[in-house]
Image (cartoon, rainbow over all chains, first blue to last red; front, side):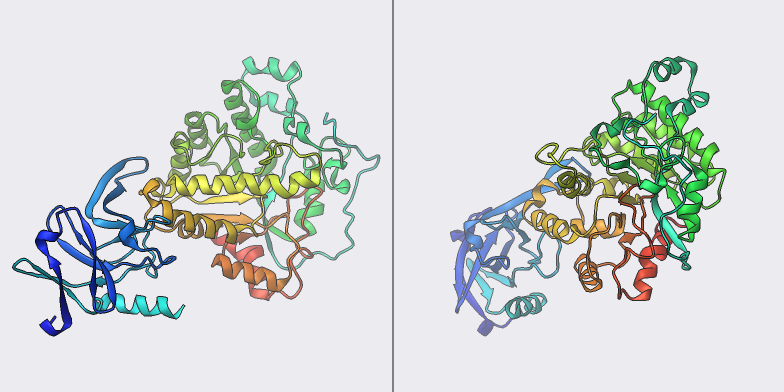
Length: 137
Length: 365
């Protein structure tokens, strides 16, 4: 990503580990998520289901299982959960946790230079088609 | 003696004037019946004889039977002695010959897990019933295939019974009544493990003992609309959401006599709820409807009155033309005649799938 295709959205110190915040890049609204590990991801802020703002939902981990009835806490710092119907998305890939390919949020490449967080102005390529499909529906 | 069944004065023949069907048929729901519980005595350990002799009788589930012309039976299928389905010669004439049945899957109506009996007596009844069916039916006509009777309320014993009977010729599935709670519960795993171990399918058959969501309604027509679909829908959801097919990846389940045209509704509703509540069911790896298409089949009878176009649209919504297995439910009064029940105008290849090929592939016949 060249400098011209990204926008400085906030400082690393503005985003504590485990927290999320809404940022803007051009006309796009994004959700910036910082995992406890320090990894930072940016995703589209709109749930593809019915349009709720994901920033009003939760960011963190979720329930996984290594067998039926055996709940574990996992994927910490990797999951946003919609405030309305609870759809969950992997902030790294934009994919829904229930796995349907058509249910995706956009992801944006994040780069950090010094204390500045830059977010790409256009979605990561892998999600462009999903977004177009969604808009055409 | 079955109280609710009338007995005709002369030996009946079929009331149909149609010529014999020419296409071969696989019938996934045929009810063989005991003339009376006394027939089980030779197969029951001595300590249980006292219960049969002191009046415990069969078929107990008719306690829910609303009065109809011939109990649960086609009027012309009631033999001189015993209930409809208890006379092999009549079944051969009215079903096997008249409908060119290549394979008739016997499904009994004998579910010890649904009976109000002592657990050990229920286990003994299941074994006795299997021995009686083997001897009286399966060994008599090579067109028959068997369903292993188990006492589902004792899953460990049920698994032992499956192990005991599975290697006999012509058993292709285990059959369960719907009344033992949700079969997705882990306590039923021994039954599914045993079925998997022996390469058997598991059939779940509707039972007149199942209430509707508003209890037992006033009229039989009400119960027939609501009862069977509700009990099957509950078991479909239980099996899928409890992750039974993650624990038993080779398990095949057949839902018998509870309808199927509600499948699009159920599949959409299951998937939509999984999308929102995946956190409750993190053990699922795929959409519930995907497991359903891979692991479940549904029998057709009692066929709902759909047109060919509607049937095709429903299968498109479901996403499979392999999901339906033809069934007649002989000898019950809501019997579906293979040559008449399917809507006119159905493409020949689809008709053949529903009436033959789907079952052949599913049951590995």
